[in-house]
Image (cartoon, rainbow, N blue to C red):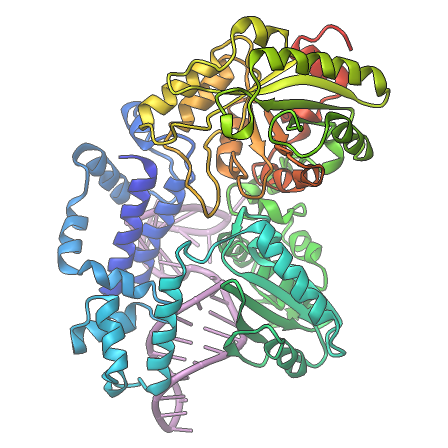
Length: 576
DNA sequence: GCCGTTTTCGGCCCGACTGTTTTCAGTCG
């Protein structure tokens, strides 16, 4: 039973308690504990065995005993009883947008509805509207919501790169309205999460109604979900849910902060405000005694007022950033200007579309001191992987091109396949001759957790290996991460002094933020690489930097933030 | 059910929008 499963169990328990109409704070306690458990660096089982299960935030005596019960028996008594009482389909019903615990319970008690299919049928047969406070519009809304839910296989989450494009497109259109002064992107998109659920926008306007009207009447809007005096939501092509809030300039800071979130971060800030005698909302601070509102025109004003250093949006997840800010221990987050090179680049020698010279030129234009050409090894036949003989020619070619360029150093490398048994695709003799060796899993993704972990750890134990690329293999919309024990990978990377990659391809973003932060905290060095297959891909580096920033990564944690001299020293390259 | 720079008891973030009602409960973020 791992942390994710235990957290899921607590989440389901919370949903059941909601349905049963239990005390909302008790319900919230389960949700909070679940979230806290998901964010743990170590497995609960390990903590339990070492007697270190105390001091998990949000877990008190009662929930602690339930965790122990789960670890020992696979479940806990109260949960087993609860799932017998509340049919499984009911939880699904509460996942339909617009339906919460109260309605789900009413449908169950009055109409015996226990599943989404039954709900859909009841709505079509107009049985919902006969219930108190229910009507025709609600039936239509339910049917629409169910259809959207069923169409939406990825649970409504979109890769940040796609969401960013849509957001910029909408921003441009909104800017053309005479009633809209300015447009800001907020929400998880501004926090740079790897995937975003919906797109949150703020517009500054003196005429809110006209601004809202312009928004809901944009040509591409497929459906208007709600439209009020200061807030509206629409559906946009590609299953994008867009939320808009209108604000007057004097409240912009508060609104930006509020709408950027995260929810947990905001709750923490509000608790902090309460302890100082103020209520905090999207319009500013209200003095508890006088009732006087202090508006915040700039986001910085809010953090200032609470005695905090400014918090970059990437950190606003209530994962310790507020405490760090209070004690002056915020990280100096990595920035684009810190990146000195790219260590994962493919050329025409394997499956890239640009020559080594073209890549070198593009890297110079981006101000890099070095790049590593890391074409595929021969097992990756589909990517035109190089034989050992070809790899030797490849090295010669790089040496020749290095003579041509004064402004950049090209490192000879490989992205060497880790075979199913953990052996590498090239012999040690040839690996030794390369400047840099990146290893990666490309096939045999279905291996079980134990084998996959052993396979990767074996690769990390090879003395010639430098970096593990895209460590979990996930690709958005294509496949989930393969099953692997990340803790063991991180430990092996630390013990063998290997780097782990944050792959900046917007379809990978692998390591993700939580794994990357975990690695950093264990003292593992990271490499923020683009896995470039075409010159334009170099610019994906910003996505990788976003992930790193969300992981609290500082320049000193990053291999390719090192100067050429430093990196040559790390890689054991004598000639520079 | 958790938690404490007021507290071991009594709090627990806060407001907008909808649909159904004539004043508000439910849902959402």
